[in-house]
Each structure stands twice: as C-alpha cells, then as structure tokens.
Length: 186
Image 1 (cartoon, rainbow, N blue to C red):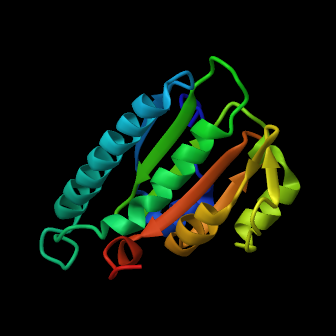
Image 2: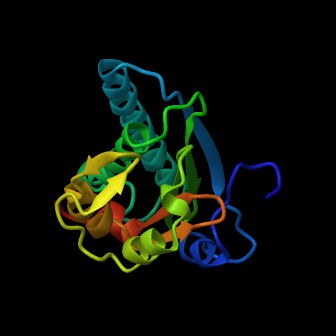
C-alpha cells in the first residue's frame, strides 16, 4: 500500500477481513496540532460521531441479515477518543499533523494513530502496549510532560482486541472486532 502513510500488518488484516481477497476500506484523517483546547475538543467530538456513524453504516451494508445492524456500543469507541487526544496532547511542538487511519474490514475495524513524535518508535513502549502492561500513574513521560496513563488502562487496553505498535513508522494500531464493537457496556 505504497500510496498510504501507513498500513496495518497482515496479522491485523487477517483479523478484520473475512478472507484474503478482501481489502479493508481505508480512510486517513489529518488533525492539525496547533488548535486551541476548545477547538480540539470540538473536532474530536464531531469526528467520533462521524466515525460511529460510518462504522454502523458499513456493518449494516456488510451484514444486512445479522445481529450487527444495531447501534455500536459507543463506549467502546472511547479508545479512539483517548488515543487521538493523547496524540494531540503529547506531540512535539510542530506543524506536522496527527494522522488517524481507519481500516474497516468485514469482521472488524483497525485504527492507526501516528503523531509527529517518537513515542511509538520505542521498543519499550511497543512491549508495554502490545502486552497491555498496566501503566502506573505518571509512569510514562512523553515530550517532557507527565502522562498519567489512566486512559490507556481504562479505555485503550480493554476495548482493543489486539494492539500493535509499528516502531519503524511510529504508529499505534488498535483493533476492534465486531463482537467488541457491539458488546454490552464496559
């Protein structure tokens, strides 16, 4: 996928696509890093509403006769909000945008988060996130700011069926299968 800024691994594609011939629907959204806090909150809230609707429509089209035609459990999408806010809040001061990649397959979705920093280029961070090791309060220091880490423990870890970190491109991937997106409240 040479024309994309990043693309999920084969392992992720096997999880979210029904068969090897299926290619996920890709979408990339670029978020400016120079927004005020209020503008950032407005943007992330409106984006979350849009992504929820897009996922629901996709799964109705993919599966018109099965149980995945009702509303997605919106609390499960708080992982997108948390990872996106972390990317926007803990980046280096730069004019480069944060990029969110959405990959919709017939069996689930994958979100890729890439900020302009080097946080997800660390092998230690890869190990922590992929193993879902609990982050203690202020354990991770990112870009000379303390990171409490509670949002990772409360939203990203429990709502992700798989987490991968691409250290070469600095991308955090979070996978949610249909059973997770449509499960009961957290």
